[in-house]
Image 1 (cartoon, rainbow, N blue to C red):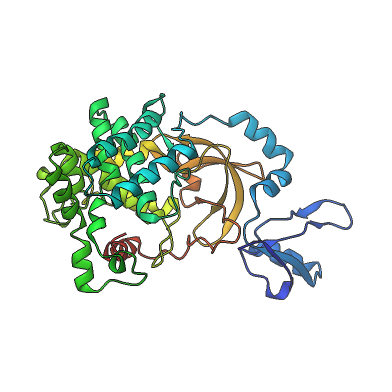
Image 2 (image 1 turned 45 degrees about the vertical axis):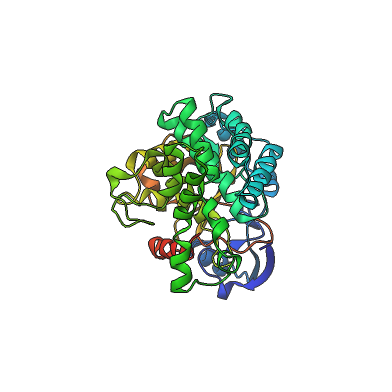
Length: 401
């Protein structure tokens, strides 16, 4: 949703509305309320007490360029003093992502080819090289867009994230190369699901859902028949929907039977499904998705969750976010520092106030959170609308990503 400006009566003002003009004291010339401020009860009472009948307010997030232009001198000086660079991040070119996505699409369309195994190794080479080419230990999780088709893009994104998790997990180079193939092919069984079921925009019937839940088994069988894939790759594909509490599928494997590849791919798979828009669901904001992963300790391996938290970069240093308390936006702010293993609790500086908000270490700000700016022409992010994330996760599973 683009920013909308409108004139409203001060009698109808509500806490949390954003004023779109600066209010100046006529006698002293002092700025009393700065444009862009989210009004509180005290400020609303001030406006009414001064006999101001109406003001301009705005809805929707400004873009980063506008907020940079509006940044106060205090904020600029504070940001310069306290900013700490992020840890090195994985860099993958759009061209590589596009090539890998097209390679995955080819494999999904040619599962009976005699060169299928060779093709999977060739497709994975560039991705492995990109992830292992430097000392990167984290990934900007907004960078992965490899294909317009969900299944193929999802496969590339899961493989990339799984490899980074595996790297931080301590896997060897040989294991990471196999993990990449398992990630790319984790949904290959969907090639045996009828398209009318696979692409159904609404909720699946019970029969369709049972069929969809077999895709990991179909993928395992497809790869095993070729006799060219290792057991870790086969188990990564077969078990990526298994859960430590035994409530996963396709067989409900107990925790001790779930291979480490599957444990890693499962985290990447769930996260990517949560933050991706599908015909039957809106995407979760990345912060909410990360917090949902953090809460799945009965289903996902704790070491895999911890590795995930060390590996993702939700709010890169230098990005502008909105600071809120769950009900109202308090201020726009620039991210100046991230903390290892706490990707949703950065240190930020208010764009207008210049105030430092350390969301991890300062107890005054424990009730505050940050979220990304709403993209232009997109629907409002559902920050305040999420009531029960686990209920939404169940809907996701019912629709099988």
